[in-house]
Image (tube, rainbow, N blue to C red):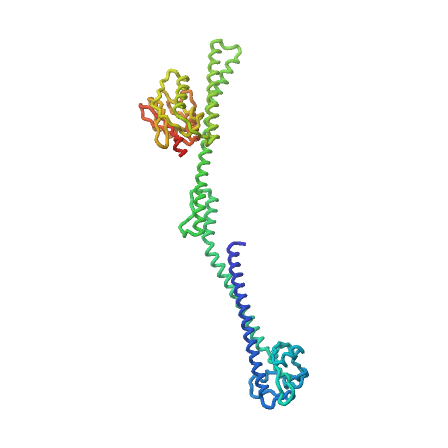
Length: 452
């Protein structure tokens, strides 16, 4: 059952119940009013008969000229309850009066009751009278309620028909109003379905209406679409990067593996190659094996950086870390000049083990600066600089500039550096000028700034 139908039915049911209660109260009120009018008329008939001249219990005559006389029935009883006389229009019918009511009537009270004669209801009024010079008795008068019942039946039927007609009209009106109220929701649903079918998360739902519940719903869905678009774009970028990563890794692995295989085939020749050539082949195999080892280690480091996002950080003094990294770099390449510039005595929020993996260039100058919130470590060389076309791709995996394609690296160093720095909630940037060198800068939040 649709919401529109439920709303229309609910509106109709509530209105029908309200009308039914109101009609019931009206019917009861009219019924009591008409019954009271009939009772007043019977009391008037009683007084007219009882006060007429020559009234006697055994000689009952209805007053002439009274419009209601043909509809009025009359009967007298003695003090012991025996019927004494009846009006001509009563015939053989007896107006009832119980012994308990007889005693009350004789005591001066009146009694009113409803009886059924020939399928018609009658209202009977009984009250005691005193006969001239004789014993007291009871005078009973009655009126037919057929006309009253007919009027009430007409009123009841009219109310029922009116309630049914108004309920049907209310259902139609409720259907129209519910459709009008729900039309914006239907429009929002259709727009959401259209966007879902097209899988175009750049689309948005028209949200120019009032800021009511429907407006807030559209705004919420638009916010969800923004998040979906961002997640979809991120997933697309991740898939592209993954495909490129697999392709580049396959390419980088293929070259050393091919070289190793070719050299092994040379060693399997019969007759064998000369000893000096065998020694050269073994040197090539060892070199390519070391190249594979470096590639595997770089890939493992990069995978760990990605998997550990974000890395746990703690207050880390930068001076000891820089000194340790520079000492390791000097040991790896004693011929390269590495100078430590002025290093402030500050601590940053970082991971000590990860920071030590940040690569350095050569010849280089390592320095640091700090402000209230952050501290930066810079590595500056005096080389040829970075070409403008290479700058946007510098931190991509397996990317190497044209002048570096003959080198021993595979283009993972800067990608690893960026992954490790960003995993510690830091950032890495590069600035370069042709023929004047490049400067790599990593920035972390200072420990005291974060703790405050």
